[in-house]
Image (tube, rainbow, N blue to C red; front, side, top):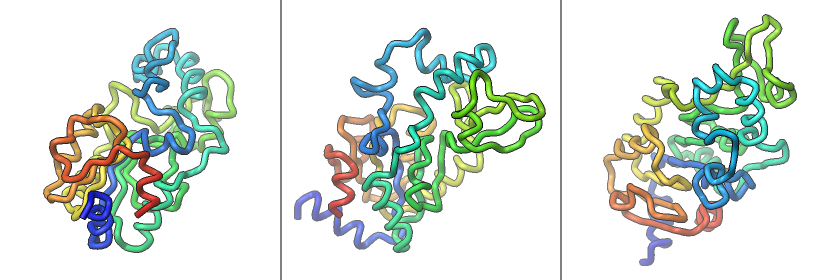
Length: 238
């Protein structure tokens, strides 16, 4: 039995699959990742992206933060889920997938129909006033100019986890709990270099961990199967 056939058999047998994913899941939808040759971290800006996406930069230079955020973090309105998002949503609907744990903020898993999604780094589609707490959709930031303001005068902040900020405790514990209960863990489209999120895969206790990524990761030694194909192409073939 070759690797693909074994993967297919594991999926058929699974009842508590968990998918842990990163930016590579959305590249086939047209959203660039961060660390590839053409990724965000290899583009030239006035400040390094990790500085511009920090809490302190948001506080000290809000106009520059929002200018960068609108251009680089909010997906175009025509971006749609790809075959990977759709396959995962179908597995959940079929009662095979327990949860999705994602580092992405693009909301494509939810758009594809997935319900139990742990968004470790938040979502561009959720925003709130830093003064009164009022909730806003993505349009409040996307369609504004300069620093978006609430009707009370407070700054509208995206519900995304910036550098120097902590992950949401409830989301974090839910993700770790799901991974620890998985009978099949699929890790896809992530270099597993961003912590603490990358360390969550260590909560997996089983012997069916499948890693799908175009390049090597620091967790390759833990995987029972490794694929280097595009993730949407691979999952749609299962």
